[in-house]
Image (cartoon, rainbow, N blue to C red):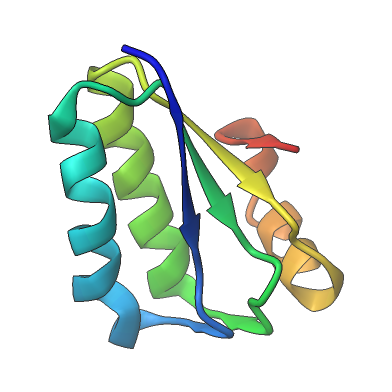
Length: 94
């Protein structure tokens, strides 16, 4: 395995992005060519509890294949929400 893949998240990361999020990460996990998935939060202005749940599910599925999921570009209220939810214990913030 080799490679880093970036998933750019939308400005509104909520349940409406659920299907698209799964469509983006499933081939990365199943492809066997990825070591790290980076969730790019640089455009995210809003996220809700369903987004946090989707992230945890991604982490569980990724860890089975020894793929690390990292968070990049979280800022402002988005960063505060992620830290209040203790996501730094699950994901590496880069």
